[in-house]
Length: 280
Image 1 (tube, rainbow, N blue to C red):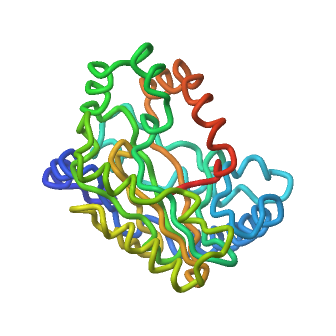
Image 2: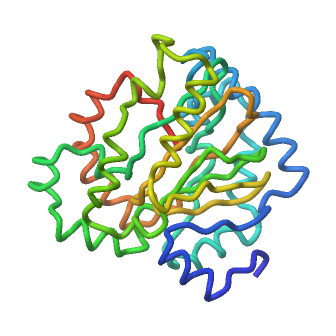
């Protein structure tokens, strides 16, 4: 296999919830991806403002972007095979043109809140009625679900992750205390109550406050696969030239789940619409 994945890697992925496959992108493709991603970032700034840090779907800009490098990324020789070895034979890396890009805000630092994907975006009553704790625990234990990808084109240290939290049904009191210690308004500080340096350190300390969390250091072309049901966060500074492809490893079971329960995200997402561009 082109990208080596050992039995120990598979075990660690199941236990920790993340694994980094080093340098999957060839140099020539990396150059092309950087070129197109730079233009994509400028389009996102144009359409969503200088503090946005993600472009949702490359295909939404098909008239303005050369999507061929993203198509080449999807079919990198041996990449799907490595992902399948870490997860299951059912997995396929989502077509890159249907994926997005994470990048640095243009003007000021900011951070997302600590979060666990999907469950944190569904109202409790609707979650219990339609899914429930027992089914959710099955999903947490099933590697067919919720495998997310970050693949940086430049060095990226923005993502923090809490190993082992991806399979836990309930959060600890300490984790919830960290989560509740601030909110998205403070972390974005649009009223500029803090200087840039004060805000940068405030966000950094919030990341560091989560017990056991690790800062993931990704080199150009690395492929981070992680169960996004674990606690994670994105912390951003304008002086770091971040351009990270953001996608998923999909399965038929996960596709079916996402379609069946997408409506559950709508009430909570509506209340968060102002910050709908958050990523990790």
